[in-house]
Amino acid sequence: MKVPSQEVMDSLKQAPVTDPIIAAGLPTAPVSDMEAPDELGTPSLVAQANKLAGEKKPKKKITFAVDEDDAGRMRAAFMAEAATRKVSSFSQWIVTHLMDTVHDTEKRVNGGQAFIPLETDVIPKGRR
Image (cartoon, rainbow, N blue to C red):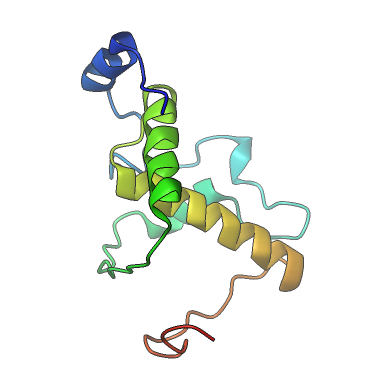
């Protein structure tokens, strides 16, 4: 397994968190043209973050099992990206990537509209 260089590791300790979403300092004013809705009319992530500024929603823990090698690759990818993307935690990195996939799926199969959140225990547990 490739291990990040000491220089990369040192930069993780020194890198300030400037991403407003990760730093929990969500902007309350427009940031740029990035706030414009996309071609399907879906508000940008910046606009959604602005809308949620000040709202503190409770976090919900979700657990899942992955192959040991996949887990190791995820950790390696996080470490490789952490210095340049300035993510605050492995969990935040995973959530960011999962939500990117959710947004892609919403665009592809739901006309760009956000899915209606499902309650816990709607999805059957275990293998299908």
